[in-house]
Structures are given as structure tokens and as C-alpha cells.
Amino acid sequence: AGSGRFQGMRNGIVTQQTFVSPSLGIFSFLYENEQDFLDLELESSVPALDMSEAAYIERSKEFLDIQRNMTDYTKAVAELSNNKISASVFLIKSYVPLLKNLASEEEFPSMYDEFSMVTSGCAEYAAVHAAWRHKRTYLAGRPQTIIPYLAKPNATFSAEYPEAKNFMPLIPAGDHPEYPSGSSTIYTAFAQAADDWFSYTLGVANASSLTGPLSFTIPAGKFYWSDGPTNSVTLEYENLKEWIEELPKSRVYGGVHFMEAGNAGLALGKKVGHACSRLLNRLNKGDMNATYTNPDREEINPFNLNNE
Image (cartoon, rainbow, N blue to C red; front, side):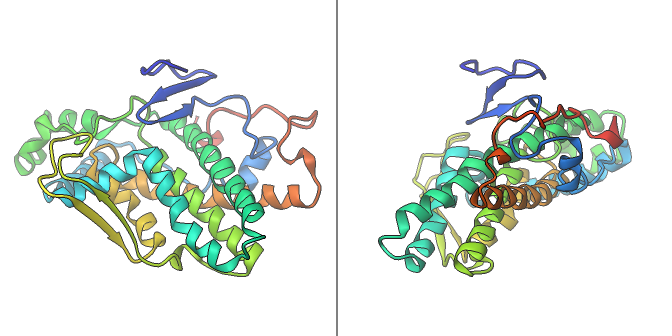
């Protein structure tokens, strides 16, 4: 686990970028067997990926059109979503003021513990596990690999996008498959689990839309992946939902994902969040088998059944 390099697609964990990710163990605590995985819509929520050359050319055009308009602000957006620690703290801090306003001083500690369990404790980790299964299914290439490859035999594409031949991302891409975006899945799962929790526990629907204005500042000269910014950059959002919806584009800004991968991550993350809410409800009803290994657990297919 201490290695900074990808160890291959086998059971265990690898470290890459700023988070620890599983290369798909035998089962997740979130689902008990293959049918459970399917019933939770953790497979069907991610659209099948068209891996034809024509599809990748269209993805690359969309990607490069966005890349042509990069600024210090969009670089800051990319930096926040790429740093799993900063982004996770951003998520927590977005919801805590709302919870403090709704819970009494006596209630807050126990409520926050349960909130943390279903979001940080379940959704973020389960999201990586679910995303990894899809990544292993497609083994899709990153823009850094795909775009220069497409530029060589496609004269029209190369002429329209001369930067394609030597494209390099702002942020070094993780050396694991591209589709779907793990970051988009992780953060969306957290937000969905949090929204569900606020709804079930406090009767407040769509809490991510009620967080109030949010901001995140990167001081001058503190970009991690590039020089700059010359001046401090403050990202501002009307609420957390606005930040979540921007995630697919933020991964394009970073140069590490095509837009489709981010959108698929949003869809998968919502299902993971709902699944974690289901798990918490089972625990609250006294079902202690909800998260612990038991004789009913079964091995699951490490790949999507319809895409082997």
C-alpha cells in the first residue's frame, strides 16, 4: 500500500494520485452478491461505452474545445476536484453548518457521527469499488493516450486540432482506466448519501441545494500541478449541488477524463449514495448482517456481465 506506482489489476490496494483505491476485491460491503449489485442499478446506471474510433474523435473534439479556454480559474476548479482530501473536506464543510442549524447542541454529535458513517464511511469508499468494476470492464484509455494516437491517422482531425498531436494534461492522469470517472463517482455518492440522510432524518429534501454559498481559495503560487496562480483564485458556488454538477467538466479541465466519463460518474455516484442509505436503514432496523461478512455473502463477477 505504500507504493506510489500502480501494482496491476489484482486484489489488494494501490496508491495513486491522492487516494487509496481498491483494484476490486472479492466483494464490497455494499452488496451481498451479483444479483444485489444488479438490483441496486450499480451496473445499469453506467451507459455502455462506445469505443469506436469515430466516437473517440467526437469525444476528443469536445474535450479539446474545452481545453482551449483554460484560465487560472478553470485550473483551480481542476485542482480542487482532483485532490481527494481537499474535496472531501469541502463536502463535509458544506453540510455541517446546515446540520448545526437543524440539530440541537445535544443532538449534533450523534447525528454527525451517523452522517459521517453513511457519507465518508460508506459512500466514498463504496463509490471507488463500484467505479473500479466498470473501469476493469472497459480498460478505456486516457485522453493523454487517445488524443495523440487519433491525430496520427486522421488528417482532418489533426488539422482542426493541431494541439492534439502533442497533447499533455494539466494533471498527470492516474495509470488506471478512464471510464467512468472515479472522482465524479466518489463526490456524487457522498452528496447523494448526505441528501438522503437529511431527508430521512430531518425531513429536509435536496440538502445539497440548501447549503448556501460556498467558496474555496487557492492562494497565489499554490497550484500543485502547474505554476501559479499569479493572484489568489477563489472558487464560488451558490450551493454544493452546483459544484457537483460541474464535476464532469472539472475532470476535463484537468485533462484526465472525457466528458462522458464524468457524466457516467455522476449517474453511478447517485446509485451508490442511495445504496449506502439503504444499508444505513438496515443497520438502524437492527440488521447487523448489513455490513459484516456472513455465510450468505457470495463472490461477484469482477466485470460487468453484459460487457465481457
